[in-house]
Amino acid sequence: MTDFWSIWISVITIAVMVGCFLLVTHTRKSEIHKETTTEVLAHSFDGVEELDNPLPRWWFNMFMITIVFGIVYLFLYPGLGNYKGYLNWTSHNQWEEEMAHAEKHYQPVFSRFAQLSVEQISNDQKALQIGQRMFANNCALCHGQGGVGAFGFPNLSDNDWLYGGDGATIETTITNGRNGAMPPWGAVLGEEGIRNVTSYVLSLSGQEANAKLVAQGKITFQSTCVACHGADAKGIAALGAPNLTDNVWLYGGSFEKVSHTIRQGRAGVMPAHKNLLNQDKIHLIAGYVYGLSR
Image 1 (cartoon, helix red, strand yellow):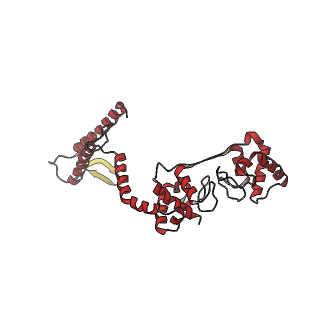
Image 2 (image 1 turned 120 degrees about the horizontal axis):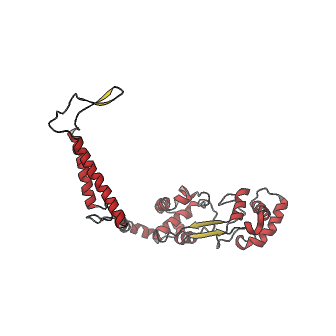
Image 3 (image 1 turned 30 degrees about the vertical axis):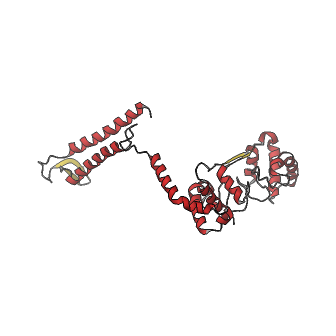
């Protein structure tokens, strides 16, 4: 933060606290006044009149205590611009301390499960419970609770895998992430070519399509798409190219959705978690994911 904004924040904060103190003390009636009075102020609404009574002592004291608390807090903790506080506290340092404590306390548990294979973890109820909680904290935002997926995010509870569903591959995916790319073909194929290829792709999964368009689309598919999706259109796991014959669609399987995918392309990113979670935790999550489809 620049010096200007640091001073700006500090001045406003102090001014507000001083203003609160002056307001409370100014409105506090002198102790000479009686505790109650029948003097009516010029405020009346719906038959309710305001009397000229002082604030109750406990209420006044409560305001003063909050002001004193604020002063002490701003002395001990950051709150006045670049001033770090007497205790030099930061949320980042506290987070690191809590994480270090958690690692020391729970690492023996994670290390014990690290001796099991991903497949063995999927059959261990205690390991699955731990993996499920870590999945909920780190993966459910994209893949949903229970790994059922969403538009553009794979369903992990079925048996359809872009890069392979064995334990080692799942662990690699979580560790290093994935970058899937379907290039746009609109400029190459034109609208007629897109219509033909879409019809052929839909026919591969058993959907109804115009036979003439399917025949023309097959020719185009074999000259432009087999490099990624294979001659049998069952996909290539090494590339993350999906199987087009199983009627499982990441971005929708309607004519419009498939056409859009071919025309505009798709770009999917699975972020790497190796810098967020240690390998033992990734191992447990991999075991949980492996068990979702089994």
